[in-house]
Image 1 (cartoon, rainbow, N blue to C red):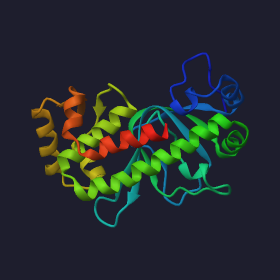
Image 2: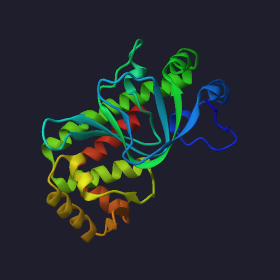
Image 3: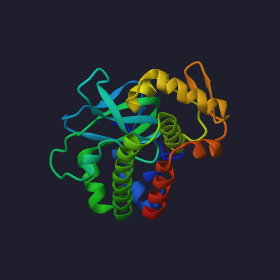
Image 4: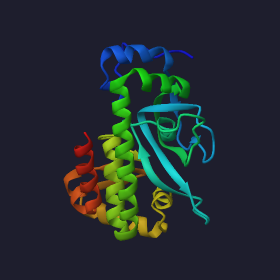
Length: 238
């Protein structure tokens, strides 16, 4: 496994904020890997042998459903986090509880689970960052349940776009409506109408399978209160 060229910027936020001495001890156990759109990184029930610290791109965490949708999105991972969350909690043979699929192509830093365990034991700042990440993820999962049961498709679309923009700030999202409909567990016409409404407000622009955020402030006003609650939770944990 080739290690990372640490002369370049590290774009994963969990790693970037570490003290230099901790990052230096980890560098020989981390290697860069590409993330390809629609690539399945983890399947439910599969052993987790490595984690990926996302640097660029967007990963969807999905739960299975027994209908034509197949899977419904329950979380997003960008440069704030890593895949294989159970490996931070389970000491022996961590198993993936959900599916992880690449939404937007990018890159990540790969680390074997056995080396992750060593880092968690020997690097206190890294362990603290990972504990905060677990807490934030639990908060986001809980808020997603509230959002799906209480809010309109338009509000949920706005929230999803904001969460994606937090993880890929300023980047247009190569996103098809059919995929967003699947992730939100709604019919495609509903997503089309919601995105059209957001575009009419000047929040976004749709063009050839891409969505660009034009007015983030208006998009936040168009989202449900779930997004604000999630930002508040993040601030408390941070």
